[in-house]
Length: 247
Ligand SMILES: O=C(O)CCC(=O)C(=O)O
Ligand SMILES: [Fe+2]
Image (cartoon, rainbow, N blue to C red):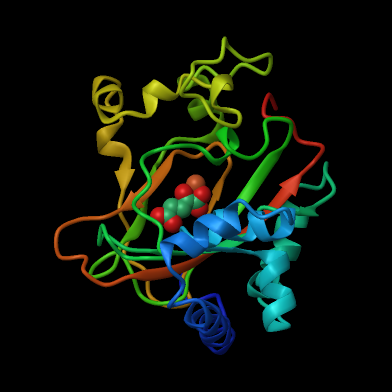
């Protein structure tokens, strides 16, 4: 956890632009979204697939706002720090860099809902390690949903989830790269059985705090009673193309 490292003015500017983008489509109906999702234009389909769950990806955001999410880690030296921390690899800006609006409220439109424990590698890449600079644009973890992590190292998590580069037989419910992991071990019963519940950390964030974790860190939305406010956060991701998950 890096406290007070992101420029508050930059975060406010990003937040304002995100709010503007969502305001633009605030009145869009569910039927209209269905039409967008069936569009012949793949960029329209891609936009709506994620926008309807409160997510905007870097390229779309940069074109709209004229500012990049990667700025969050540039001026404060975090980008360079990542490069120095992994000298054995080039650093690549991930295409999977996005913001997300999250709420506990079930019926809210254009918002995401709490996510259970997972590692980002099961959705994004199994051929390279990736680092997530998870940055809320407002305080969260108390009255707005935060994020919780299992404080277990990348190697231990990889071994716990029995990562297989070749992959296991795909279950009908598996999406993306989930079949490379024993994802059932991310369930609370399994975490309990393996004494990992006590390793779950549920930090509170102030604006400016960034939680850095790897694509082999188990994490989930931290959503508890009383978290009635929504939260917007940015996931700034750097990939290390020369560092395999089997490092
Ligand atoms: O924002 C959240 O609550 C979860 C986000 C997440 O899992 C991620 O950053 O990959
Ligand atoms: Fe994640």
